[in-house]
Amino acid sequence: MGSRDIEIEKTDNLIRRQVAFSERRKSLFKKAKELSILCDAEVGVIVFSSTGKLYEFSRPSMEHILSRYGAEQQQPNAQPPPQVVELDAAILQEEMAKLRSAYVRMIGKELNGLQIKELKDLENQLSEAILAVKTKKEQVLVDQLEKSRFQEQMAMAEIEDLRKQLEELKNKRNSELGLSPAYVRKKRSLRIKSSNNWEVMRLHSAFSH
Image (cartoon, rainbow, N blue to C red):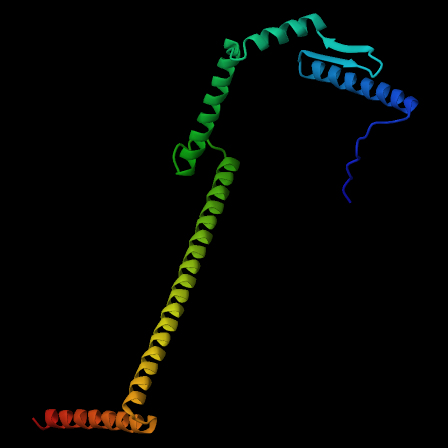
């Protein structure tokens, strides 16, 4: 089970509040000190207790921190130092060179100097890429087939609906003309029989010649 968030509320008990303040303040200042040492950062922390007592931690001096903070506030759009810009540009150029090298090798160029392990890794990457492309291709084909089947079903349903409408119109017309369904079926049968007889006569005539 994951840990549950503990709701933070104001402590009504004065003694407990003072103890909690002392412990949390020490922990806060400890973290600030670790941040300043590990990351070579300039850190300043100011805390006022509920009784109005001041506590502070700074590295370097608080005067220096406040002075720098004031200068930064007055120049919000100040440009970073030149050395920072140069470092960022160098990092960006290095990353671009790595990306270009990886791309060129992925298309089978500039492979000289690569060791067996590097070639194996490149081969595995290409195999995975090819497999991914084939899988995507198969998925696209399946999707297209499903779409075609759906469109075919819709077309068949539309044709069947039109056939039913036509049949209803014919039945309605026959009903208006006073023709019974049996008479209509008989007439249709005779028409089909006549058409078949005509086709037989045409074939007989063709073979006779």
